[in-house]
Length: 337
Image 1 (cartoon, helix red, strand yellow):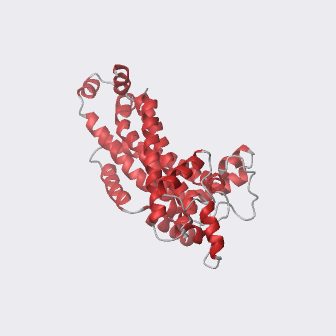
Image 2: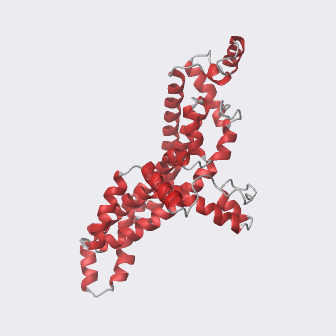
């Protein structure tokens, strides 16, 4: 019942998002047919393309036609790559997903460790240092961390590669999932995996800093609040070891607020990959979306926005399910409903 309600709500959200971005793409200046064929194309060719793309139809009719095609996986053709947009999505999306997954693993693990220590040792030197870091981490934009990492690790110390996915002297693994690191592992190519992992470190680091600062800060607040609860005081008075209190009684309720924002952070990482992938020349979905916007590739822009919206919806549904499994109060409310 809970999953069904969230799915229905997500469908309506995506529908509204698609209407908004489709309408916006049609009302901005510029003829999509002329943009697709170029300024030197004859008018008769532009007119034919407008007819084929149904651009002479009323806007609601155009949207219904586009939506029908999109449901069947047809987002039109990109004027940049000259390929079906759905093929571009299949090609570029896995590379971005790979970065987002790595940054999520790194940021979640570090946020739990740092937030738990900081919350358990509130007002200690470690907590004070973390709070300073959290202010800086949240305030500084992601692209600034990317440029700093590029300058320090790529040009000053020269310990990490700066652009691309793989060294030129290493053959890429066969494409299975589209995620080069996973494909290298699946084919047993450890050399390619380790080399590719080095290329992932800086973009994943840049995407993780703000998330670590925010998520660890929320976990810290949860620890401090739950430490004041009566049941924790009772457990301390019974002589239960601090380690058991931390991991058995404090961690789970303190994690719930952090998990609740995890879905938004994951989706924000996908949206924030536009600049990161451009800086590191990472051939992913974000860089593809950036080029689509710079070249007014309307079909690609609509597809990018809708797919990132779908990714946002799916991420939040998964996170809500995790919270429901962790928090018994939600399960009781669902049974009561």
